[in-house]
Length: 199
Image 1: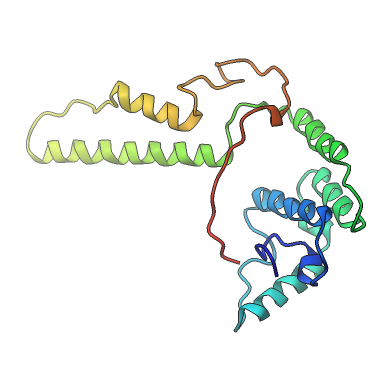
Image 2: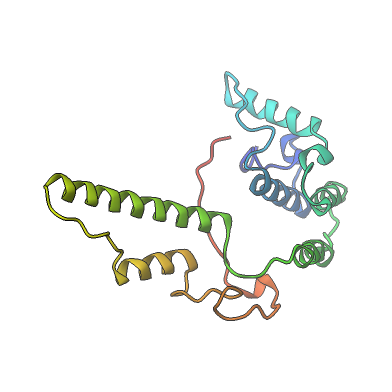
């Protein structure tokens, strides 16, 4: 198997030569991973890596797209069914696929504000750490018998948190910064990340 088993296309599991359709199918699994937080074939146990890949393959093939995408907008199931239906040499209709999600994006009234799930989690963690640090500082001062004034974050600390969460020194398009001008997402800089493979 070439690639990450969690996101590999069914053809990849079957040892069939891969083409553009397989890349697009893999992207569909990544999207559903983001939606669901996990995929049905994660966490399967086996004695060997080969057996684990076989279990993942079986689970992937036995999970209907409609079940995988249940509870999420129909566009995700449409995307995966389209990709799985492509022939080996067939060029995906990228415009059609992009339009599926562009229209959904607008229907759900989303904005290109650079606020992603992981951005919000990072901000939540930073706020929790700040609150924990403040509480620890107050407890230390109180135990020393001194009078404690409420702790406040310095201007520098606040600027760092803002920059870390928005990536643009406090101006967030669509949220008090530059207004959303309807520019397509792929005209904005890409966001990169890394992850540790577990499956």
